[in-house]
Amino acid sequence: MEQRLGSLTKAALDARAVSPQVAARLAQARQRAVARAGERARFNPLRWLGERFGAHPAAWGAGLAFGLAVLVGGTWQWQHASAVDPMLDLQLLADEVPLDIYVSNDFDKWTTATN
Image (cartoon, rainbow, N blue to C red; front, side):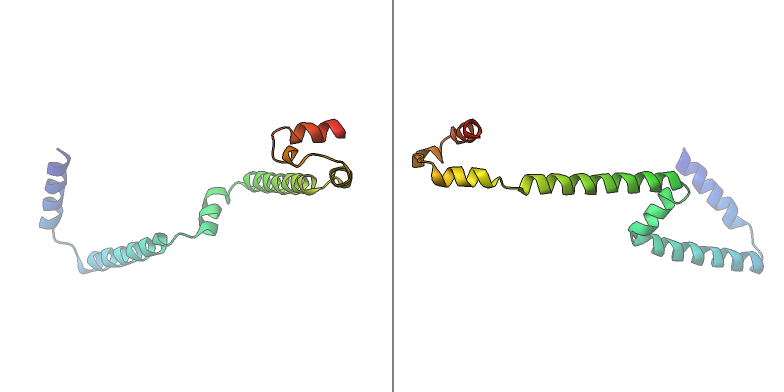
C-alpha cells in the first residue's frame, strides 16, 4: 500500500514541470543534506554530549559531581587497600609458624587471631 502511494506521488511530481529557480534551490538543498550526512557519519563524542546535555546544565553538574565522587571514593579505597600493616609483617617474620600455614586456608584465620 505504501509503495503504491509512493510510486503514485513520484509519478505525479515527475509529470509536473518545475521552474529553473526551483530546480536550483532543490539542488542546493540536496547538496547541503549530503554534506550534513557526511558530517554525521563521523562520530564526535564531544558533539554527542553537547547535543544531549548542552541544554541541561543540571545534567552537566550532576555528571561532574558523580565523576568527582567516583574519583574521590576510588582514591580513598585504593589508599586503604594498599596500606600494609607493619606489625603483621613483623609478626610473620618473628613468629615460628609452620610453612604449610602460608598456603592453607587457615592463614587468614591465623592473621586475624594474632592481631
